[in-house]
Image (cartoon, rainbow, N blue to C red; front, side, top):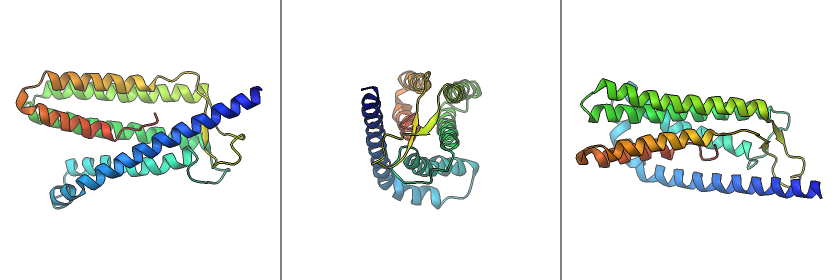
Length: 211
């Protein structure tokens, strides 16, 4: 009975991961197609600056993120000899880099909108970096208390990585950052509120959906 229960739980977990991933990928492709014309006319045609580099890195690292997720959740068949935990750790680092990039861009936008107020920039960016560091710390603790392995019960499905973590509070970082950004929008002048909402949606649309 225990074996059958474990099988059902593992199968259910895999199905949820794959459905969430498929939904996130669909939204990303939809958003990309809606904005690619603006990207070509406004970004690609502009000269190279460090801000353009940050934007393109933030936008296209998500492609690598989704590709890596397909191996992790078993959508794509891959060599069983590859290190599952190593791949999962690399994916988590990629998520942290994406978070830092998107929130750094948001901080720069806020800084510009508030007249280059350096104290506002330092405060907001410090909170963003703090949440990213918390996320990475939590992931490292989860790696030490759990293990990424192939699920032997799902023999008829594509093989993927199953993570049994006893402690994981990575979602707290996202909730804290979302709360801070929501407060920033509500306390901002009306004339910049719509731009802040757009900036926040840009920053959070690319966050890792399965973390």
